[in-house]
Length: 533
Image (tube, rainbow, N blue to C red; front, side):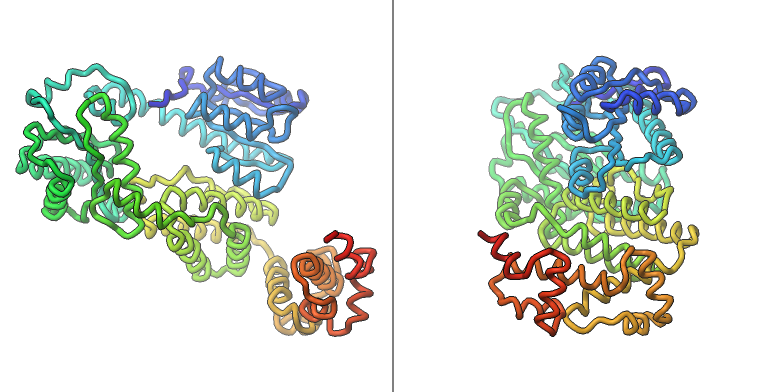
């Protein structure tokens, strides 16, 4: 089990990292860290020194620049997560690059802030981190006090010399072990409308049901909840009555079918093993198999099923159109269109599901979308985006695509409310609609007056706000947009120049050549020859 970073009393230990000492000092001495419950243990001016100090002091929080000589912020984050798995990392960057943000999300970075840093936003972020670190520390103490049994430690990956024979009958030679994990369908929907007393009663009934069901097959059980919706059960077949995979599957099926709880159960079963020293490995196996339930809601998940599913999932793409998804969400947000936002979220998660993403993969992808959406909203003057700063999704509770997409819809509904309260004026979304109109009608004649009429505003007002928002006149913007498209077609196709001119909206060939030369300094033919030789 990965060790947790210790908390020094009630203080969270923080390290500031930047290759410019003046920035380190500014961050250290302009913010009242002690009032936030933060102890700044020092500053580091490069990644190597930062890693040494972080490990030496077992820090809880690292505030680091992304661009540094030698080891940069992303490399530092990767090393820190390996050495201190529970460390929180906040990266500060002057670069609005989706690739940086995406890699930061994949590394588990807590947040990705753009320079210049908004001090109020940084303070809110640090307060949230301090609260989470303290809460986790309290939970660790409770776990250390209450979870002393051998299986509880094994499930969490902790070696233990607990005397297993004291909780189960004497094992016969050839005893066969299996690790079984069970979860309840649509758990979050049930959990969110019930009381803690009902949660406790459900757990007791659940564990009792599993044990009684297996006892009918002369199987001895030891169970522990690793989460309110994740029960691990170590099964021991001392008499070797369930000698085949089929017999085990039938025993599990009987247990699942007989359950009469508020929602159905599904379960995974590890391969057989004969040494308790291998229990942790098979616990991980059972945990992994549960992830495959979302693919077709298979009730019993085995290694064989996983292998078959992985062969079908071989084409799951590494990349997805995140920037396009965010652009669509931005359009809907600034049109104040909640129905469209919910449709877009459904489409996004529908895309993930149709491609065979497991829930953890979908959650990572959605996290990348959230980061880019935050950047775009901040550029538009929207701050206090707490709705998009939520902790990683609890996929044991939110164990379905319906549940995680609902959480995403709630996030975006909260952002929409924030936008409405912020008083952002309509020109922003008017220009966004105009850009979308240009994209969709690029092959036809485009006139500012026509777009203004479509938007139901006067041509003069449209021309004014377009210039204010883009820095270009409508004609300049359209020409630049079309020339960029033409450049791509010249390099990526064998189409004739006059065909490309027509595709991007220029019906007069000579006019196209003239405009192209104005923007690039060469003719289309010269551009193609220069870049394809």
